Image 1 (spheres, rainbow, N blue to C red):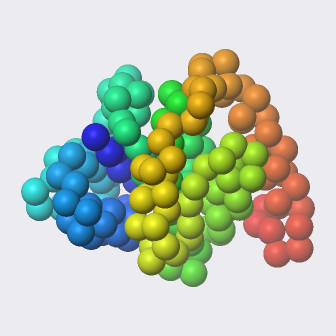
Image 2 (spheres, one colour):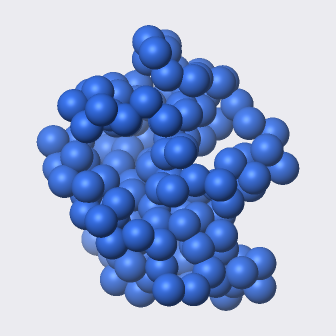
Length: 168
């Protein structure tokens, strides 16, 4: 099963539509979409508005692949469970977030933890295919990882907002 999650704060139909298109082309019917407040519900696929935290963690653990925005919760849950994760970062230019912090978050996790992703949905199918071919990481980080991951991310974001043009 592939779990697609948009998180719980903003609609993210761009992600849902991109994965739906990929899944149809790939012949994958085992995709579960957590669509949040988005307006698009893919036909022929399981779609739920929100998963409660325990149900979300269970779905991540059962997933062959997690696809989401570049939110820290999604990334950390996948890394802790040892599931590959592909992210489509929300972009300020498209009105999806107030700054490009998800682009920066994705870059940070990609560099340090091997998270795959893009800010352009045209690149998403290739990233998904690559992640499925590669399979899960050699080892799950486990629940102990959340603290160090948050600390690293907090440090990076503090540096990011200090840069010229960074958002405070």
